Length: 201
Image (cartoon, rainbow, N blue to C red):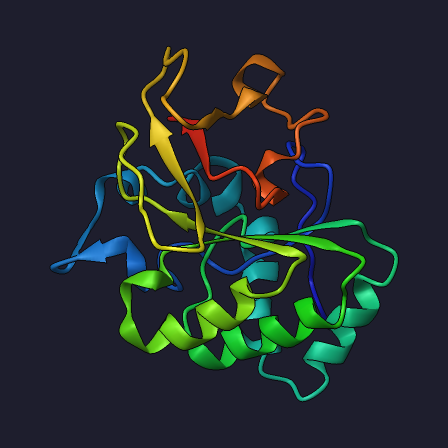
């Protein structure tokens, strides 16, 4: 059975996994990169058992034979969907299944933030997922000062310090000025928006 997340910030449901343990891209030389060392999904509300349990469940559940068809059914009437408000697509097998879900839900706009671009074995499937017109695969930067990742054909995201008013060639996430909610902003799902910059939590 699929367990979805309903985050108060976003205008849609999401599917998530436990932070850090499904985030191999969060580490460099065995140490957490700076932006992940202060991960919002590894503290506060996210460490409550009622929040952590569904993510642990999903870590096993996606391996089911019927998982793809169940996800397609779940998204049948959804216009927006976010992958991973915590966690990442830590295996190529999961990434292949995500491709099938996105391909078979063309009416739904997907947003997939990831650091798996760091691993060569994900290159082929990331390109395959990114080729679909209804998904924005956003490559997450490790930076907390606005440095961005540039891979041809992909959109990206970065984190900037508090009180940042603007960043060249980037869309500054408005949630910090909107009670920590997306409001009517849909930049993260928009493949035309090259870079989204999030204010550091």
